[in-house]
Length: 248
Ligand code: IPE
Ligand code: IPE
Ligand code: MG
Image 1 (tube, rainbow, N blue to C red):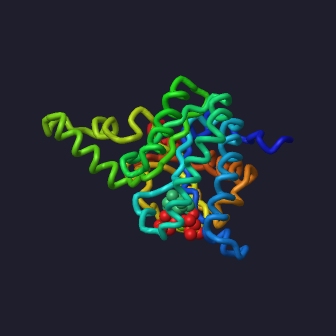
Image 2: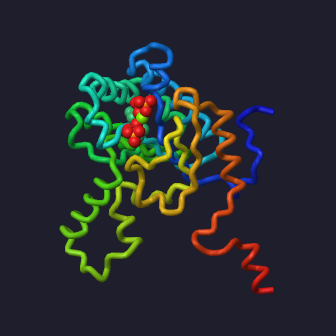
C-alpha cells in the first residue's frame, strides 16, 4: 500500500489543514548545526508536505512561515528567513504552478523588501487560476494584527455597527473566501497558538506532535489526518448520534 493512500472516507478528510511549522531551530541545535540549517531543512520538508497534501486531496493548506513576532529574532536569522522565501519563489514557483497550486499570502507585505514584495505579488498573479490546492503562506502574519487590520478597514468603509457580524468580520480577514481550518497541526510539541489564525481556529481540531518540523514526514501527516477522521466535532452542540437518540 503506498503511504499516500489514506484509510479514511473522503467525507472525513479535512478541507483545510493549517500547519505551525515549528522546531527548525531545535532540529539544527540537536545536530550541532546553525539555526539557519534547520530552516533550510524545514523548507525541504515543506516541498514534501505540499506534495503530500496534493496527493491526499486536501484542498486548502495554510502554513505559518514567519510571524509578526519573528522580527524580534537576531538580524542574521531574519535575513536568512527572508532569503529563503525569495529562494523558494525563484526555484519552486514553476513547479508549484505546474502542479496546479494557487499561491496566496496572508499577513502584511509592507515590511518586506520591495523586491520580495514584487516576487510575492507576481507569484499570486501567475497562479491565481489554479485550483488543485490553495496554499496560503502566512508570512509576516499575526492573528491580532489581522483583526486590527480588519477593524480599521471596516471603519474606513463606513460600515454601520449593526452590520458588523461574524460573517462580515471573516470577509475582512486576510483569509476571506477560505473556509476555516478543520485541522491545525503543530510540530515540536509546544502547546500554544502563537498568534496563528486566532479568529479562524474557533472550532478547529488540533494535532500536536513532538516531532520537529524538518522530520514531519508523510507517514506522520497521514496519522494526523486519520486521527482527525476519528474526532467527534460537536461545535458546541451534542453529537449527531445523541441528537438522533434524544429525538427518537
Ligand atoms: C519554526 O522553527 C520556524 C520559524 C519560526 C520561522 P523555529 O525557528 O521556531 O524553531 P525552534 O522553535 O527554535 O526550535
Ligand atoms: C510560530 O513559532 C511561528 C512560526 C512557526 C512561523 P514560534 O517558534 O515563533 O512560536 P513561539 O515563540 O514558540 O511561541
Ligand atoms: Mg519555534
